[in-house]
Length: 154
Image (cartoon, rainbow, N blue to C red; front, side, top):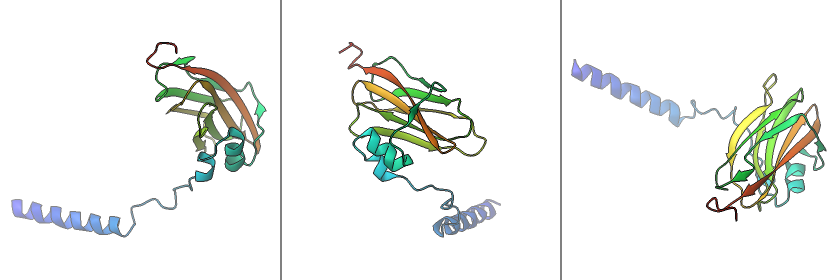
């Protein structure tokens, strides 16, 4: 009986390897193209122009950013963004103090809630900027975050 189980296991493993090796299990059609040129931009305006085609978003009170006022560790800053704008298509997060300001971007499907939550890396004190694309228009909100070293307030 052990030999039969062993053979069944080996056959199943070989079949799974063959399917994986041919690419049948990889979701290639689902994967979106990564906008590398936007993420490598050196200014927020350049990043938004490359990502969304619009470097001049309009301020909106319907976008809420939840982030700490003081981040003791700039390597791990929790940020969540909620968009109250109907028809939200994407949410992006930038940091004005970073050499490459675009940190996060998510395209949302139809009917999805306008909410994202992540952790970002901030090089120094600056603004966290949330940019929302909705109904073909671009909106933004920002929040100042002070980055300290070792929590000493420096």
